[in-house]
Length: 362
Image 1: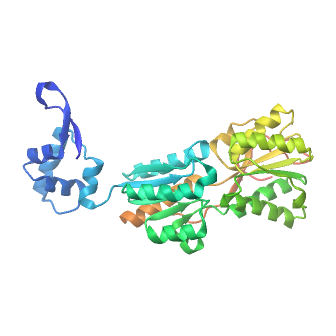
Image 2: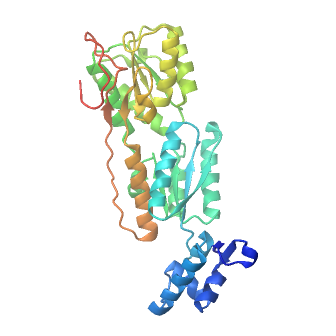
Image 3: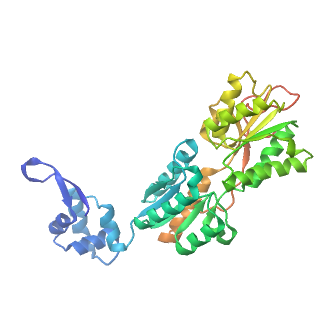
């Protein structure tokens, strides 16, 4: 099961040492070596030293399967993402992977391919990961219905959700308050003096998009804006979508001075089109993004955005799952607060355009 290169093979050819080789050199049975590797049963100090010495001499590295069989655990966490292209999902996968590696675990990933079929693909992906022996599951599935969530969490106790909050399963839900973050976006643009708005939203079937857009419109309504007159175009959370949406908004010629984009990726596409169309940002139109991705600092001009602490959310979700599945005591946060990351793409009306900086308030 476990194999590693050994320097002692015939003809000087390096082959792979097995758990049987370790047992033979240590003078014990394979089951004893398995117990030692998995720490799943008693092994005397004297025997443990012999096994350790044999492992070192043979350069043996226990395989994933060798570790899992004695304990009934695969030491693998299954992760489902709707897609893996773009900087948003790549950054989240990287953070999850690094957190698992820090805790001696590995990751198996299932992904979707068609946004319109996201609900079906999530359910299929979860089934795939479970059938492949993952100890626990971490899924991002904003398209799932409440009934789907209830059935999944009741059937699979070692499952946590990213970017989805279900009050009944609050302990297994890790998500920002998108409605509150949407309100912060509206307040940011309003307090900067803007009164004529446009918006590029994400996929309308994604509940997180619905929440942030609802928060945005509710806050503007509270402040006296006529939100029925605000043009809204879908940008599909992508640079391509944001570019096309910006083109549609300019064609409508509504005279807006502030553009809220429901993701940094769509904002990057919108900035590109506005520049090519000769629209000055932030001189003619201020642009506000959402997420706080690394790429937002490299647009032209650098993007002011609503920063969501996605790293903290991912780390806490993983920690919670590991605590539940393996009995560890890793730190877990439950509350995640959005903040404004100020850069140069939003101008305060009547003032000189804001210089490039981060943090702070108007």
